[in-house]
Each structure stands twice: as structure tokens, then as C-alpha cells.
Length: 108
Image (cartoon, rainbow, N blue to C red; front, side, top):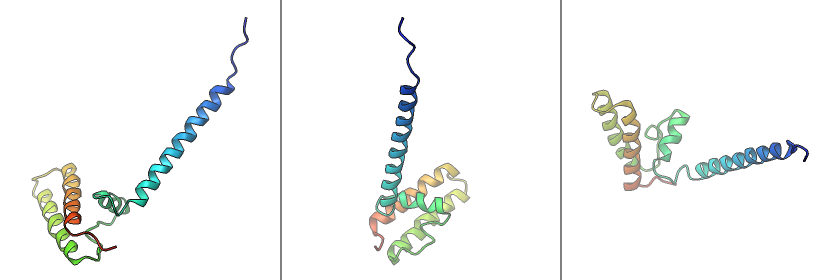
């Protein structure tokens, strides 16, 4: 009879997969970090994670600031009046920010 297979290849295979997953996650995080200002809608996500809204900080473009104040204010009003749910609020807010950034690009 043949001797039972060693458990070493299984352990190294598992370690290799964990390392590959860690590298993939690090690459994804790096791509998101590099594109945080260039990807429409991603600015809202970063602002939500940091606790400050994109509409609250000056963008350097007065037309963009006015558009954000108007559109995001309208979306907040819709949420307050019960027209949209809190889950819809995040989606509508992201779309409003994307719309304004497409119309008036932020100053770099």
C-alpha cells in the first residue's frame, strides 16, 4: 500500500490562496484609493465613510457647490417627506452628486 499523502501540500495550498486573496484585496483598495476623485459616485462613498459629505466641503467650483446644494437638498427633502426610503436616499444622493460632477467638474 502507498503511504498516506502528506498534509504539507494542503497547508501550502491554503497559504497560497490566502496570500493571493490578500494581494487581490490590496490591489482593489489601491485602485479605489487612486480613483477616489475621478470615479463618479465614488466621492460620495468616500465622504460617507469619512463622515463628511461631499456637499459640505468646498469643491473649489462654485457652480458645482451650488448644484450639489440644490440637488442633494432636494433629495434630503424627499427623504424627510417620506417620498423615498433611507435605502433609496443613498442611491438618489449618489446620482445627484454624479449628475452635478458631470455638469460641473470639480476643480483639481
